[in-house]
Length: 258
Ligand SMILES: C[S@@+](CC[C@H](N)C(=O)[O-])C[C@H]1O[C@@H](n2cnc3c(N)ncnc32)[C@H](O)[C@@H]1O
Image (cartoon, rainbow, N blue to C red; front, side, top):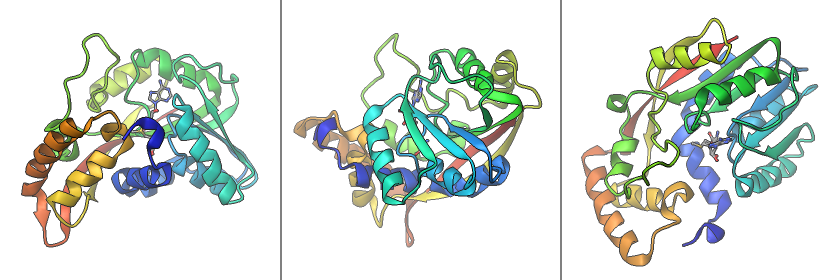
């Protein structure tokens, strides 16, 4: 499978399996105003952008992501739901020229953990907010509270040296979150723990298939490598089998700032 042949609808559904359990906490904290202007950073397929657009029925939403193929699918989903108040724009959130002072609230569901220069990225987002505007995002909690990265790591090729941080735990320490956001000009930074569980499938084999089919992971593997990865993933998922399926613990920080 190559990136071009990814079934984007199925891939988007996998993101909901993995991250959808955090939406209620994210949106409770975001308190999107009915006439609000919302920025969704690293929005991927735009599930949270669309939920924000439904809440900001008299306002509007801009979904940002660095990956245009995801945004093309995000636009198709929004069109399919008849949402006219959400737009998607490709750009690197670290440098993208968002209009200054434009947004009431910036949200992100796990889209703010991959920055090479997080202070620059959060500073760029801060400038896009109105004075007093709010930032609300989830970021992956500490490795001990998250089973998914340990399973994925069982089959992951080593990250190339010198590349951008691909570690989902790059922003998992509340002291570091406070330091980064403070340096980027945010105040009143709070990190609150949130926990959910992820059910990857009925058994370890299904869990391995789920992860291999996930665009973020499986797209780059040839057949032999995929076979080795499948075996490693199945073995890594086996200890998490329960009568209710392969159930993984997932913890995150819900971060709010002004
Ligand atoms: C874990 S995914 C989360 C996607 C989406 N928020 C969701 O919850 O389904 C992280 C997203 O961040 C995007 N991303 C990574 N680095 C970025 C950057 N520098 N600027 C904008 N988006 C970025 C990726 O393309 C990806 O879609």
